[in-house]
Image (cartoon, rainbow, N blue to C red; front, side, top):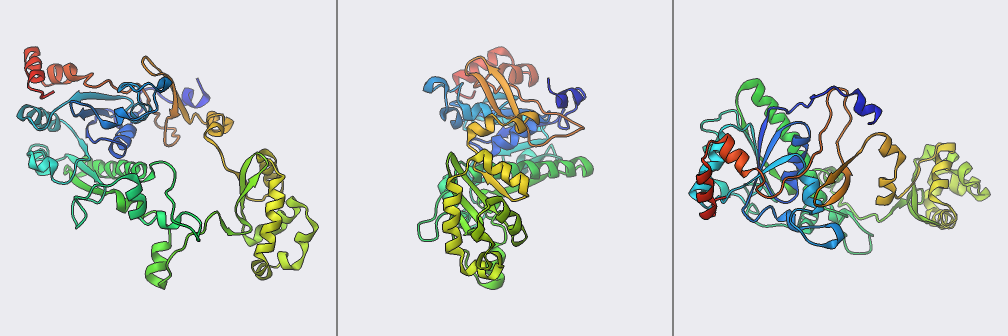
Length: 404
């Protein structure tokens, strides 16, 4: 056990006692629910009878597909309870209403109008639960001309403007790595729910939150919106370089770079140690811009002889913002991240040993729990029979009707 873990008091999770219904699939909603569960909430994951589609995504142990060992599903759904409901049946809808009556938070990601058409929209679910907080996470929001359009990650990268900023200026725009629109929407949903739930606790009145994934990611385009609206300047892709002292270069064992301001130049020149860098055409900021191509050529040659570790040591010694591009193996083996207990480790009976990011921050007042993700419908009996009071023969009937 780490020093940090030893310092945490027992049972100090801020969402303990809070019931969350997660009707969301994929990444965004489950990512928000993951952190609520990690902070103590009882997250009941309501899955379609075939299961959350993310169960069909890998990676899997030995590359053998299995709904219960999907790396993506296990990462997103730790410490949740799973019930299966078919919301196209009257029984499935009735069970959901009963669950919502005792819930504080509902997370959903169906297409706009899906729940309302089945009598399960916010207006209906909050009639007898005025403090209920509910969030809908969709690609383009609940209103507007594009509200009912589907979207993939590539669509959202493009529609947010982020893709326009990524890539070489003389080539086509590029998609960023991973599924950032979905994960960023999940983080924003977590923040929105935390604020709305606080308001419900303080004032006794819940709220409905309409979160657009496009808007979430578009809002992260820094000052480019301001430049376009205030100055009429269209942002352009910059590739890996803003200038010779602000870019990414190939090293002898990977990639590294520099992100230097004019005040960093003296330290940079000392760290590199090439006499020509003392020339006025490089040391003088205005002349440096004019001679940027020549300086960049020098930098290509110098960086190619450096190692990642050597570059970091030079940066620390001379106070120069050098760095290297970390691989995921680097992150997994990072003494710094391990020393801060960034990773959670767990043995899953089906998937084996798992290691993944286990928290968003460190706190002296609470800790995080990262337990097992549920098997499909694992808690049907526990929740529908033991908590809602349905008889066991009712469960048999409900299964026969494909309601659960």
